[in-house]
Image (cartoon, rainbow, N blue to C red; front, side):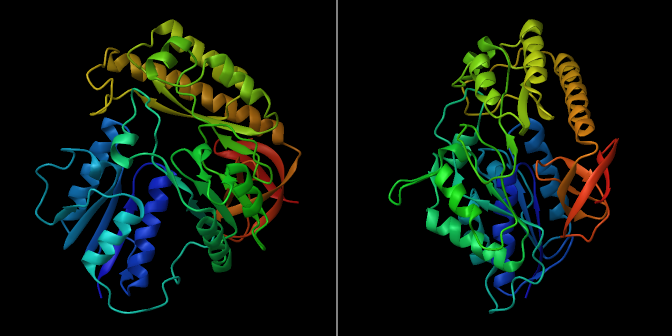
Length: 387
């Protein structure tokens, strides 16, 4: 038996991949520790230069104490990202189930044990799709994860039933491009999958993690994360995005009442001050409540790998302005919730998320749903009491 730990960097897809590795090692009889361990798995990210740097740093730290460090995930597929690392580091060049299978096979099994005793029972991330076949000029995901591909609907629905049976209160459907989910043989698109997933007995909440192509999805929590990247048409064209700013805004206008969050890149080579101002204006008009801000970072293998024309200081200034706007828009939504009652899934002491994925500060047993009334706004979210 080996002791092991897993760590993920990056998005919810990376988290789901790390969980798959964790479950395989538990199922094979190995013992999980919170930190350290003879076997340490770092599931990496390469969406920006900073993400690769953090992945390398995490790997180097793990190598100081581990017998073997397995580097999995996106950055493990990026050529040269881990050149010159320590001898006890294994760069798998694999993501998802391929990575889980490689690590489990290399470590080896010791027998069948109860593999679920340490699994998080609050929410489960179920990956339904992976990869990307679009060609955004800045994005390295098609290079490191390959073309878009979907799991079968039967496999997804079976995993949701299994997760609910384990005691998970919430299921989050995740993927690189959720809107690209297709099971053509069985006649499923995303909307049908969501409808049937929502009918799973004892499932209390279903949520989507991030969606590129908007699809009407009934029976899902009223929150959508829709990447914008820029609010300027010239920048969007240079990025290779497949919509204009007005098209993006019109589509979101049909989704009134939803809590909308997004991603934005600042300092893309085609972005001048006027273009950035248009992004700020669009984010505010749409009412995004959380903006994940990424300073542009040229990625190897992409069409803009050799272009980085906006000064770092300018990127930082624009990023700070956009984050300040994001904070203000969050507070506006939180303030509008004061006096309302919602169901909150408590996922840590004194804190949880309402159905629209706004953070609420309320007491309750971790892992439980509580009915809460919003009474004020705090720095971290909606302050609430039991209703």
